[in-house]
Image 1 (cartoon, rainbow, N blue to C red):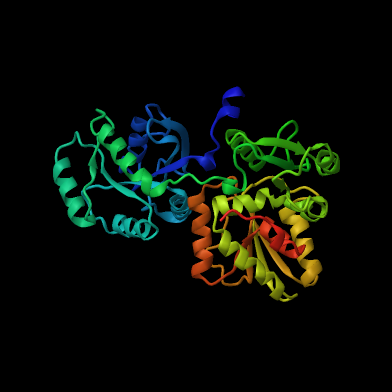
Image 2 (cartoon, rainbow, N blue to C red):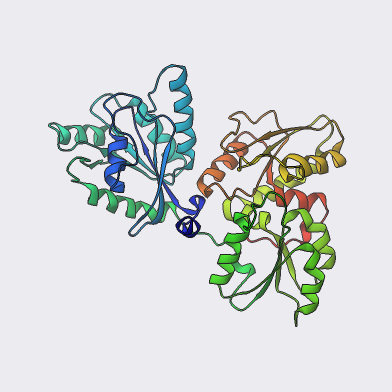
Amino acid sequence: MRAALQETPSANRIHIGFFGKRNSGKSSLLNAFAGQAVSIVSDQAGTTTDPVNKPMEIPGLGPCVLTDTAGFDDVGMLGGQRVEKTKQAAEKADIVLLLCGAGELQTEKAWYEEWKKRNVPVIPVVSRSDMPGAEKTASYVEDFLGEAPVLVSALTGDGLVQLRERLLRALPETYDPVSITGSLAERGDTVLLVMPQDKQAPGGRLILPQVQTIRELLDKHCIVVSVTPEGLADALAGLREAPKLIITDSQVFGTVCGQKPEKSMLTSFSVLFAAYKGDIEYYIQGASQIGTLTETSRVLIAECCTHAPLDEDIGRVRLPAMLRKRCGAGLAVDIVSGMDFPEDLTGYDLIIQCGACMFNRRYVMSRINRARMQGVPMTNYGIAIAWITGILDQVAVER
């Protein structure tokens, strides 16, 4: 239990994906790279089905998640479902290791070009460098893709050092750590956190956005005061001066806004994560679409968590109720969770994304870009609630 509590959350790790056709050596390479048996290795095509994730620390790269995937040439009904899982993993990848062989590379090139279009670093790899003809295969891959591959042998370990070096060179282009609170809180500032402890928070624990925010504020050497909404008035009265920043749960935005000192800035965990994980400007623009919704409109609410819904669940209960109260009881609201997110979004008038603490920024941005390309407005829980309650202009936003 202690080790689990000390681990870096998966969403904050660099996601390195191993992609290629069936039997291209993905699982063997991942095991060699990790130095342990993470994925099952077999000569039988299609051994890897669902993506396999391995969190680990890599010197120079820091906390990472290594992801093994099913071959993107899988076939049949189940094969098609596996390829869909591989596509979802591809949207999460911060760096891609693309394993290539001596055969035709049309499929590899199509995936390579799609990643490049999204500015995802791709490192071509020719595995099994200990086998005859590996150098010739590498030359063929370089001619076809226009980029020299790394020659690696999972069996002997040759090339693993060179592969790590290529990963280190790719890092600055893909991973630029973003601060949760940014310039809103600095060393010595007093920050007041208002945190309702609802049924969704497991007993004895805080939810992930609260934990990550508290940790960052402590690292910044801020003075952190934490209360529930019921203790807000007493906390403000007990402080010698008004806190510079108040961070609240979006569900009690209205209550906290009515009590906050004039000098204090106000924001929410969800609003902070809107900038930390996504595109805050696009979310703010999308929130204005709420004013145009009617009973005939359709809204998609996208949760990242896959928890069992509870009575006061914000995404499934409270937010739909707020929208229907404003727009009419007939407003259609679809809800998806986890990795389920429609390819075709054109049937929706608005998408409302949760804070996305469980996803990495790369994947959240892939959702935003899909919505933007299809002309569908998108916002997030905190921004939407602030707009509905009429206080969005009073909310501090880290841009």
